[in-house]
Structure formats: structure tokens, C-alpha cells
Image (tube, helix red, strand yellow):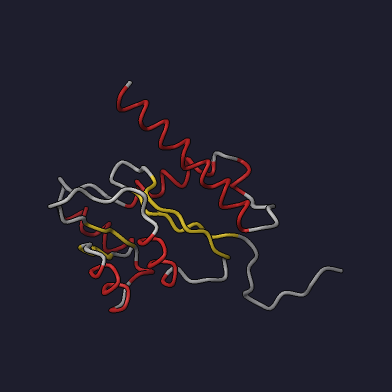
Length: 152
């Protein structure tokens, strides 16, 4: 018989990613599934690979898991303009304004691209380091494919 897990305990990995508007991954942090998204915000923002151009004010769209004064303060301290909305809020706003496009689908699409790497869909890796290496390889492939589609 295997180890007894407490109720609500989860095994697995969580990917905290930061994407640009085209779905290209800019930052990656991996943690256990039992952690909330909020504590992963600062490491994700600090590990960004490509800094925004000088003179621009980057917008940061986040879901309702990042609501709260502390998360907003962390985003603003790093120079981002936070836009934090839940799914229903975004859907209602899009319904009211016909020309506005949803932003959430970019993140969902990129996670779907990552899940096409079957090794990432269900994590059997014993160490967090090896899983991080696999996710990094997957993000590198996504960047390469996007670059090819942009530049031919």
C-alpha cells in the first residue's frame, strides 16, 4: 500500500509562465501543485529572459488568482501596469465591446502547445530540476516555431 495523502493533497507540478502577446514564453518557474499561484508571481517576474524595450510601459494581464494589494504592488514595483480580471469579467467586457479581443486564449493556447509534448502532460519526473529542463526545452521549441512562422 502506498503513502496516505491528506485530503486535498496533490501530487504533480505547476508551471508559472509569463508570455508576450503572441504566446512566446518569456519566463518560467516550476513548483509543486500544492502551492498557490500568488507566491510564484515574484520569481516569475524576476526570471524574465527578455526585458521590455526602454520607454515602453508593459501591461501585465493576470487572472483572478493574482487579485489583492500585495500582488498588485509586486507588479507595479517591477514596472508593469496590472490588468487583473476573472473569466466572467473578461467575457462580459468582450460581450459589451464588439471590437475587443480576449487575452486569456493566448495563455491557454501556449499551455496546449506545451501539453503536446506528451512527457509534460503527465509528470513522472522524480526531480523538479529534470521537469524544469523538459519544460524549458518545450518553451524553446515554441519560440523556435514562432520565429519560423514570423520570419519564414
